[in-house]
Length: 49
Image 1 (cartoon, rainbow, N blue to C red):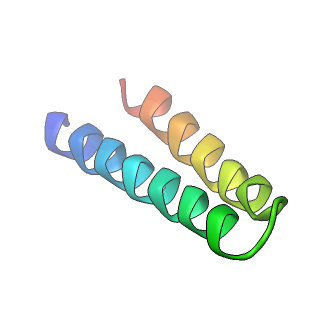
Image 2: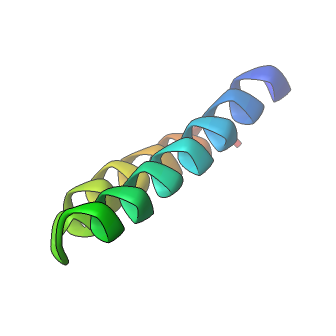
C-alpha cells in the first residue's frame, strides 16, 4: 500500500514539473490542464490512504 502512495506522490511531482515547464515555455493556461491531472492523482492518493 505504501509503495502505491509513494508512486502516486512521485507522479504528482512529475506532473507539477511538466505543468510549470509547459507554462513557462509556451504560455499561461497550460498549467490548468496539468492541474486537473494533479487533482486526480491527489484523489487517488486519498482513496489509497
